[in-house]
Image (tube, rainbow, N blue to C red):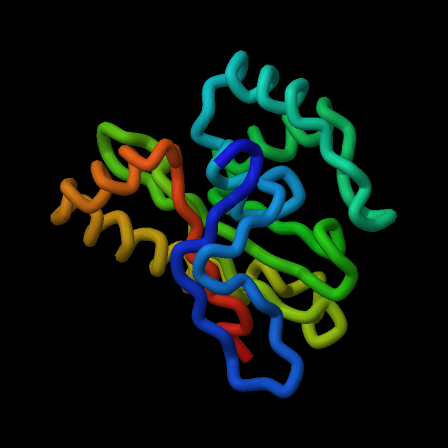
Amino acid sequence: QGSDVLYLCHVSAQRSIRLQANTGTRYPGLATSTGRCILSGWRDPELREFLEDNPVPAFTDKTETSQDVLFETIRAVEKEGYATISDELDYGITSLAVPVIMPGRGVVGAVNSSAQTQRIDLTTFAEERKSLVAQAASDIAHILNSAPDLLDVLSSTGSRCVAISTVGWFK
């Protein structure tokens, strides 16, 4: 909704300190891996207009605020198949997201996996998680494909895409 990502589902690891993206949570899309994945399905003119209309505030000193860099980062999702952020939305949050892509509809959402930055190795984070998150995204696309009415209902709310968060799913 607007420039935010709406989280529809959240699964969290049982830890004393947990990252929260509860059902119904909204986060600024451009500062999240999930939002960047969702935006990767937009055409270039539409994406450039969105970036111009929704400047990103610096949530941390690591938040990417440059429209040109964000454009290229989002376009790279198409090639790489995933997006990552680290300490951009808030310090201590690193996440990887994969778009949920449906034939004939394109990107309809994204699945992400987040971790506390200090608990992971940034050099191996994406490699360790991307295939499992991609499998989850593929499974969701398959389910949605077999239940088109569900996607139609979600679309009728004015949301173009949805996000599913799997915080702390691994390790």
